[in-house]
Length: 276
Ligand SMILES: O=C(O)CCC(=O)C(=O)O
Ligand SMILES: [Fe+2]
Image (cartoon, rainbow, N blue to C red; front, side):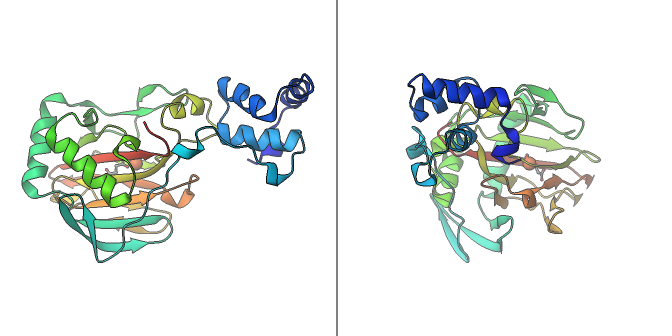
């Protein structure tokens, strides 16, 4: 949706009146933001309504905190105390398959630490709350950032690999799937047109990239599919798939395919544009 179609007459009049009352365009943006509007969109709308030249694009007070991930380069990339193999690279979506992000023993340890804390995996709903979602039938749990030495070590590897501060990561999520369980096609980024967008992005801003780490090798099934580009990444213990979707890339649509035999364990790290 472009800014023009989204601006209601009421909002347009409010922006003009607030500006005429002597408030700066920056203040108008801050007021909109306080009322739950997306900051980036608010700047675009205010720029258009007040007919500001593009050169005058309003500055975002938090812009200095906004970061993007760097995509690791083949063949080898440094990840803290480990070196990982970049075994596949794709441009759209920006995607890497990484081999050896965790050792086999570390995978087992994460599974053991998570097992007593598992519950039905939830998703973020339209109003920003957590919900049981039929598209996601696995069970899971979250570690708090830096909660345990191994969790902190993995977070540091991820920060190094993608050149983004540890503070931009959500807590590591562990998911467990049994035969028949899956995670149907979805995006990890938040839709700016959903009513809960301001709530889910109030802390940390938009999600910019995901890292799905395989903690075991399912006997059959359980890969991660990217249906828009016809790619399926095999779930292999200790390896990971990283994909970035800055600006809400539609080609990042993905799914956890049903496990056919055995089980599947993953750790997922979502990265945000600002400190979370
Ligand atoms: O299970 C998978 O392979 C994908 C998981 C996923 O998409 C997620 O946790 O957001
Ligand atoms: Fe996902």
